[in-house]
Image (tube, chains in turn green, purple):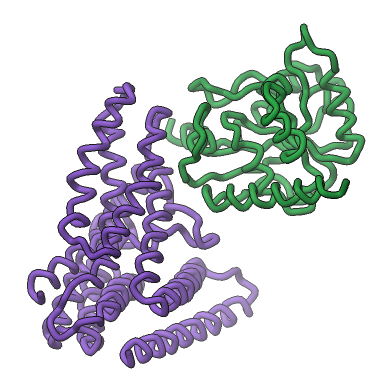
Length: 218
Length: 312
């Protein structure tokens, strides 16, 4: 009965240690402090390593209560993946295909928040394989912001992880990564979904150092 | 080896004095309520990096050849990681990049370990340099082909091949100096790193005429000349570590320092081109491995071949 949390904690520690050894990752707390109230970290997504890297940047207590939201269609595809996602990585699995789905992703995420967890979400909804720095945001972020005004929404720019572990690759190439944590985005009274999603996407993009460099040169 | 003990006691003394002076200066300037001036902050970070470097090298020396080879294999790993991070890579390069870390570094240092000069001196510039474009071509992605291949070739040249020539000094059979290769390494590192510091000090004190204003505003002719002369004198003072006479020690140190200067200059040019200030953040807030090893990268192979040609 008690073996699972222990296994989970060990796995989390081992993964965080590995992420640090390979990428030498350093968190940059640009817009908020490392620990704070319950949070939803939202980040750019291009690699399976993303949430491991992000959670390895969190302080240990925060890491323990933080769970990543992942696509059920991918992680339930076979038994190994399912065991990995459910037991080792402790992810919150949501179904992305709204035609076939049996459970409402919002309900599942809100349940996890109610239990006191912080969440890591990737509002692009899938791994970004394009040359664009960031895809359009899905509406989940807005729905969460609307339903839980007390939870902080922290934008986190993940740099380089897509080069460390690109799609389809199994072994990571050691490259230096950074995770930049920005200022929490707050849903303003009366702000509509489209405006909010646009604003939070821009808040995330503004953290991208490449973006800033391009602005300075251009 | 009595010499090693004396050398480390000497270094410990120098660093302790340096730390004491920096602390005193910092105390004096913060007492007035100002923030630490940037020169002093920079000095502090250099001293801190030195402490870490000396500690790592001492531990490696305790384990002899194996320790030194492992230490520099790690230096290569950290340096290559910083270098590749700044290059332009594409998804198709994944296997080549992996190979650079998982094959090239271990093989190069293993060849050093088994003393196979005939192969470790050509493994990278012949075999790897031909294999890399071939494998990149097989991957089928020709976009910016030449640029991608040569960037990575130069990465393993700098970070693996050149750096591996520091431990390679252990494999040189210098007559009458058998089993003392560690001292040559200590001599090389002490003079090259010492020259870095001395160039910095002379530049701060007397620097007026910049060597390459577009690349590095901190490198001046006054600093360069003062640094090389004083580091050559340091070499003379350390000649008891080496098989060299006093004059030879001075010349070897001077040569290593000139190469070190070019190493630093080239590293600055690359960083400037990529729009970054430091290579990485290995030692928190004080730059990366290559920021500390850039001068050694250029100095080591030349120093190695000089010793090999004239003393073996």
